[in-house]
Length: 215
Image 1 (cartoon, rainbow, N blue to C red):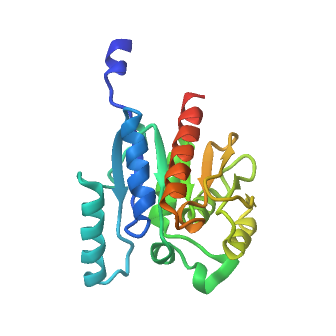
Image 2 (cartoon, helix red, strand yellow):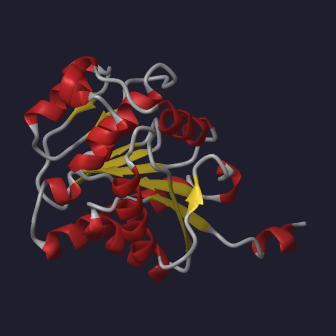
Image 3 (cartoon, rainbow, N blue to C red):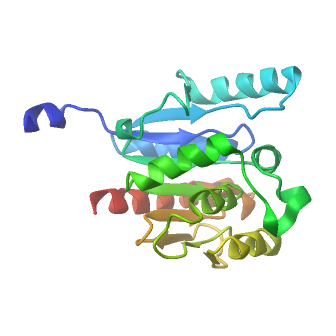
């Protein structure tokens, strides 16, 4: 049995965002450098018009270069960890933060997906705009309030704090590791427009996730 298990490929799920190009690309790079396989996952939220849906799918397909798995079809047992990427427009598509502020809620399909992964005890990483989505998704099922970062964005920080988490201000390339909840967060592209910093951020993110996975 141990020999069979050793042959099971190790995969990291990456929730794709067409806006967070560099987060996705550098995350893929770190995954492949480490000998893992990448499993791109996504879905298009309800209410998206046909033209926007077609454009989004085209961008994601160009990014992934392999078949994208819908989150409802992905078994948490098929991955070793999950990384969440999201840009501003997609953040607004997956939640109502712009209209509800600190009382925001998120897409129920995305919420259920993240909660399932969290309950399996798998490490979850999130960059920038994906962090409030993560915090809101696991609200109510954590033993302690998550400790996270979105870099230095006061408005998002307020939304995170209102969701029962602690938000830490960080500089570009810095990640926050919440060992208790197995979460790794950073500002990602939200914190820096310099590609070298985003690349270093993704490298630090992946190293932290691997340490949590070993634990």
